[in-house]
Image 1 (cartoon, rainbow, N blue to C red):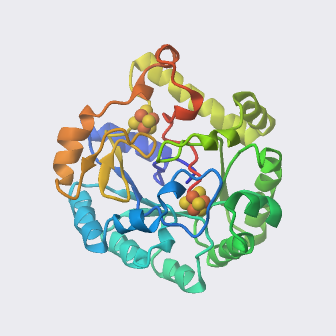
Image 2 (image 1 turned 90 degrees about the vertical axis):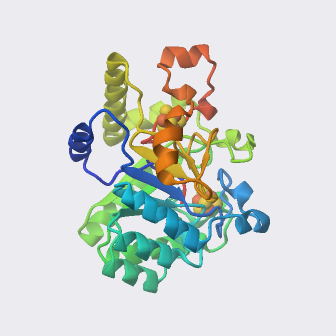
Length: 340
Ligand code: SF4
Ligand code: SF4
């Protein structure tokens, strides 16, 4: 579940120009689709794991429903599709869903934990490449990695997947959610990713995030893994790339505040669909939903979504007044999502 909550594979400048051309009105440009809460791992900080039960999985969208909704999104002009979970590759029909998205011309990003990536899957991606594959790398030792995923053998399988992908020169981003469990490992993980790129003669992107999200059932036990703000700042200050990224985000926020605009495209250019076909502003705000099983995407996006509330769209001073706590703050659509 980590990296931009709705990632954009479009170049930032291209995105800016495209959005400017689209004008003031809403337009459904990018979708993050949580295909399932099913996963073969049980990461300690996972917000979807509570819904990884047989009863819940039975309620998830079926393939024919996904196809129907995807057709509607395509018809509406959407360009980007981020397929996430849970673990999307844990769905038996993942490849059919992926292939259908590619046939429809979507720019597809896949969030995966990597452990289910086989040679066959990697070869399939060579034939029909994703715009980006994002894999969470929680640690550099079996003990630290599997202490988080709680999956025996997951460390070796994840590293094997990374190599399968790089051998085929597919686009790859590795990402880490900094937690109390791995805070001291971040510089080493980033260094490892950089060496991987050099070894394969390619760029392996790396993202660092720090937000631990409440579980979907509202449980707050995951709060124990959240790094305090001063420790996140210390990590970011110590690394020039992280520091530059933080400065860029701060500048954007400042600019938005001056312009009096909202700081995200949730419900405007971006949207989220959960595993049950519910249309939402973003992955981090599921307080209101529109049911795509019974309604049309066009009605949901244009007539209903714009009226969904989001307290995080307030200026920061207002957030203080509203007493929005850090663990509930999910207002940065570029924040790393640990999923996959
Ligand atoms: S791999 Fe992702 S979906 Fe699976 S348990 Fe870990 S965080 Fe959750
Ligand atoms: S401001 Fe609200 S809608 Fe936008 S990304 Fe944050 S939580 Fe989602």
